[in-house]
Figure 1 (cartoon, rainbow, N blue to C red):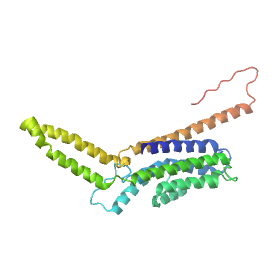
Figure 2: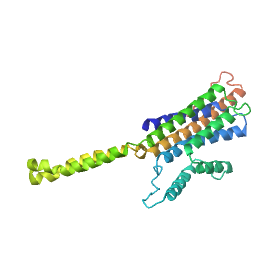
Figure 3: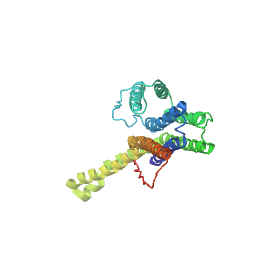
Figure 4: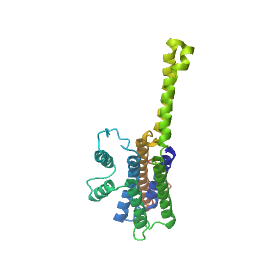
Length: 275
């Protein structure tokens, strides 16, 4: 499970970097600029949808699931929490972004919705001769990364939906319970009445602890720090956006210097990297 999330972090960074470096930012095409921003926000949204898709509460401490809650109440609480997290990515005051966020929340399979939207943007805008005019090789690289993310989604769902055989888990618990209850019988002649109780409690504590760890490992996504992985992808995308802006400012500075004719009369000019 951790390897799959690591692969998703790498691929999200790779796609974001390609979008920022290979999509022309000086073309003046408003639709292309909007698609670039939307694609980056979709990449930041993808791990959040994974988090809620693979766990019952999305690892959100604000969701308190009680035994008496119905499935409808749990879905409502999860939708509320997911929408609250999307506010940090999407501008809900913008009609277009609000519409996409609403369609995402209404989707039955949210990670698949995000991946399909990214495929659509790459095919209809980035690769279009009228807009991005992205080279077919570069477009195929983005598609390959998205296909790898589809593979990550399938692998995570396989882990989630293939639990350990239930009778095996129940039999192990019953066996340990019976074995721990019978421990005083062999220890009484060896440890006496004073030593039997503490020795039995110590051994039972460790054996039942191992059994509890095994039951938790059956659902690895509930114990992984998924919110940290989401924050890592979000911070990486924001850092690349800031870096791209600095690079554009640097290119503009060089172009202005070139237009002025460069250095004259042997004067030396120095340039300080803003990074």
